Image 1 (cartoon, rainbow, N blue to C red):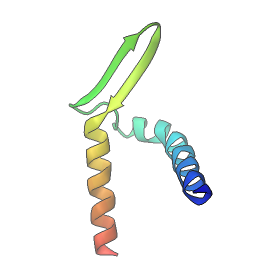
Image 2 (image 1 turned 90 degrees about the horizontal axis):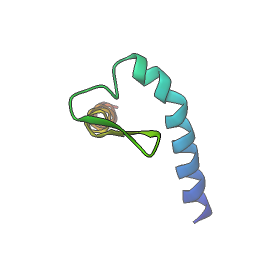
Image 3 (image 1 turned 45 degrees about the vertical axis):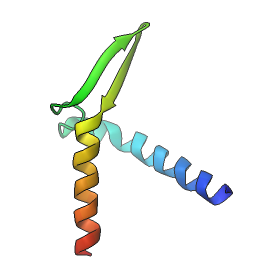
Image 4 (image 1 turned 120 degrees about the vertical axis):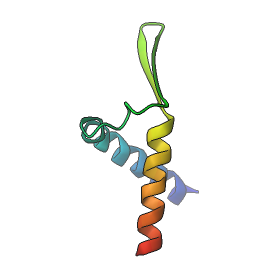
Length: 64
């Protein structure tokens, strides 16, 4: 259980580190990515970007 918590924590840390780089490349602004303001805070729901990144990682794992 602790191993999975560590993996999830490291994955979230890695994703949060890559977010600014991915935004500069255009991810998070694709059609299907939702951004809205609610209660004074800006929320992002990157559905299309998540699907695209998942597809790319899936292709990379199948090729390697």
